[in-house]
Amino acid sequence: MKHGAQALHHLLPILVAGVLAAGSSLGNAASTPKVQPGSAADFRAAFATPQDVAEGKRVAEASCASCHGITGISTAKGVPHIAGQRPLYLYDEMRLYQRGNRGNTPMNNAVRFLSDDALVKVAAYYAGLDPAPPATTPAASGKIAVKADPASAGKAAAAGCAGCHGEIGISKTAGMPNLVGLDPKYLVDATNAYKNGQRKHDMMKTLVSGLSDADINNIAVFYATQKPGKAQTPAPGNQAAGKTAAAACAGCHGDGGVSTSTAPSLAGQDAQYFIAAMRAYKDGSRADPSMKAPASSVDETTLKDMAAYYANQAPQQPKVRKSLTIAEMAQRCDRCHGVDGNSTDPRSPALAAQRTDYLERVLRLYRTGERKSKAMTAMLDGLSDADLDALAAHYARQKARAVIYVPLPSK
Image 1 (tube, rainbow, N blue to C red):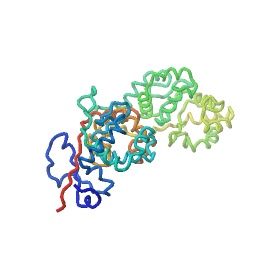
Image 2 (image 1 turned 60 degrees about the vertical axis):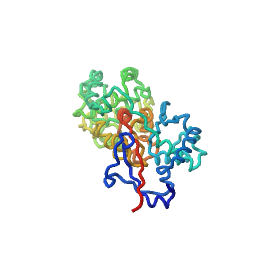
Image 3 (image 1 turned 90 degrees about the vertical axis):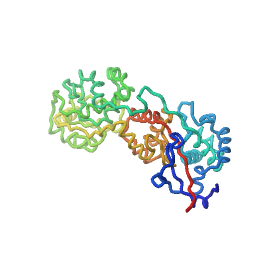
Image 4 (image 1 turned 120 degrees about the vertical axis):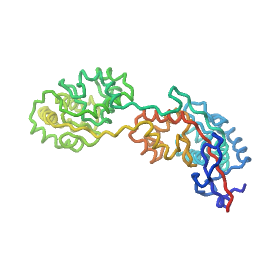
């Protein structure tokens, strides 16, 4: 078979998912997804000859097998399977590592001195291997597990909080904060600050130390979805004077103390707790540079007046993004990565049967933007660590199917 731009100009590659794995026939070519040919350099890995593949195996033995295995099925934690991966994706990824765009030193060093021809051939070699088998888990045969409702799970996890904060987060004890009406992200950050000791409170640290990240996220959603109400505690002070003094706080905490950002809402908050928090910002026992100066400028009388004003404002329920089920999340991912993670796009990686620990790590890197992809970061925005772990487990359980490229002769 000829290679190069001239040859590719006369070829139309057709992707056929599952042919190698299922042994099915090609079927009707007119209904099969088609990929428009790009440049010769783009598609060389997809049109590799047996000689190219043999040479690619020699490159793999020298540069790749120590981590990925000569079979492309990794046995090392965090190292991905690459057997049966899409050849153009493998080629593109190695080019990114060569340029330092992935920030992975072992991979940078492994591919740094490989020629472009070597990259093409080693990509073709690994792409032609049988994919890894699906991961085995207690879940039933790769079916998507039902995701528990976060608010319901949060209610159960928050049972121990009711004694101080009220059954649904409306405080009846002076000095104990209202937890309703708060943005979930703020409540997660505040709880973690108690857990790691950034906020000094021995009792709170002890109470939250046993909570997992999933517990904390679910508790925050539970309180955010409850009907808000004012703290049922005393609030002495001059509300009119407090309203005037609080005008400077509206930029972050919203008019009337109803925040439209992740800054905490103050409407309906327990007055004694508000005063204690402001004193903590003032003396530095709560470290927050953005709050120290405003808190330091307020005297005790004004502080009580502001507390009275905010305590008597009506809190509002924050906007909480609807939680997606694992099935719904996977459907969004399948748009690019193929049904059950079997990509038919030569530049989108297959996710089926990939190592769970690798997927968990990479999904987190995309979510934070440490691994660059605007599309991936946007898709993962708002998903919790538990969501990412569930997605990783789902795709690890799927059956991986190889893809073959069939060049058709020109008419």
